[in-house]
Image 1 (tube, one colour):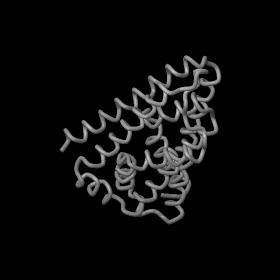
Image 2: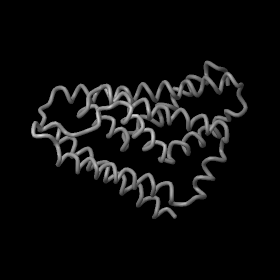
Image 3: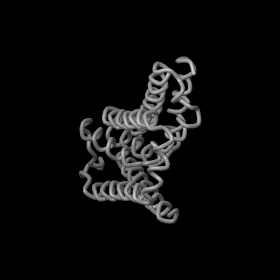
Length: 208
């Protein structure tokens, strides 16, 4: 695989893992709606960083990653689901304590948001499973070192671009709706996150 083909493959792989609208995407959109673009961009950067790191791990250990994580059993899925449920519940509780002006009480500090999304994305085993399977499928271990670097760069750029697009969409929407509508959207978003968390944990337990 040449470097040019590798970066294109990386871009496609990055979009493949980033574009499905799961709980993290909902949270980035919601962060943009309630907190604006800057903290949402921090969230987007954290997610892209984890995608890139997991891509590097997958290239290093290849097809070993997927079977090893599956051998753990339901634990990774249950932990990821529990984290999502906890985050959603905390968000709903904070909405009840929102300020009198109707603006949801969310974290607007980019550093705090970055760490939160970094941890939340890192506990999701789906990403490393995805890249582990992909690296085995395209036999990246047989390509040059430069090709592997370009693949990782492609993944990181594609993931960051998509997550930033979500952050921009959320902040665009947030600046054009009423405070009451922001609270309603926040409640819906956090409820979706709770539902996704319960579903993730349930699927992991049923798949044992």
